[in-house]
Structures are given as C-alpha cells and as structure tokens.
Length: 154
Image 1 (cartoon, rainbow, N blue to C red):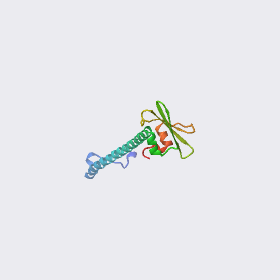
Image 2: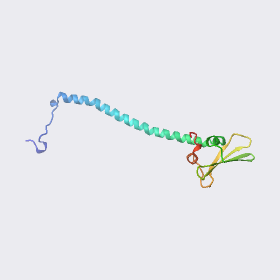
Image 3: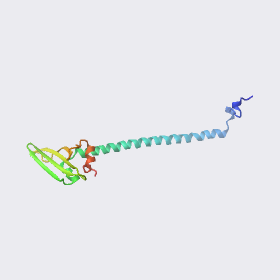
Image 4: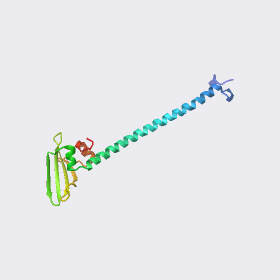
C-alpha cells in the first residue's frame, strides 16, 4: 500500500532515464555557461562604471587644484578679464599686488599676490577674499565655486 502523501508520485530509477532527458541535460550546459558569462560581464561592466566615476572625479579635482594653485596676476587677467581695481604697493623687499573683481551680484572678490622686488614674474598667490569680509576661500573647490572663471577649462 502507498502512503497518502506519496500518492501519484513515482520514484525514478537510473534505468528509467530516457535518451531525450539526457539530451536536455547536455543542452543545458552551454546555456548555463552563457548565463554565467553574461553575469560575469555585467559584474565587470558595473565595476568599470564605478571605477570610471572615481577616475572622472579624481581628474576633476586635479584640474580644479591645478587651476587654483597656479593663479598669477597674468593668468587671472587672461581667464577673468581686466580687474576693476589693480594696485601694487612696493614695500622693499616685497611687492604686493591687490586685484579686485566685481562679481555678478554685489560681491567683490579681492585677490592678493606678492613677489620679491627683484623678481618681476614670480608672483605668489596669497589669498582670495570677499569684500564683505565674511568669506575667505581656502579650498580650491571654494575658489572655483565662488569665481568660476578661475577654472582653466571655462
């Protein structure tokens, strides 16, 4: 007598397999391989996309740092135009140059440079400040965000 839970079920023996069932198993192997390759390709593509975002961000940060670190009076004029005010003070052995630029709003940005009196072109960028005195732009990102013409690509 067959127990109630196994009514209609049939156990297969190894000798009961038919040739068509074996073909299905042989055909499934290439399909499984293709599926695994597709999954591996998707994982690799996802990895590359994530890495590419990081590379793009690092490249952007390098560009911004380079643009803000290499500010000289000549480059500032070339990128942002003629300042509204450009004053040089000679306090031997140092020359100090202050350049003011009007922003689109009410702000005026003040750029300060120094150089030794005997070196005509070796300006050192000291600071970028807001005329209101409320903001000082210390990081490269803050400088570019406040005054976009500093960015070498724009």
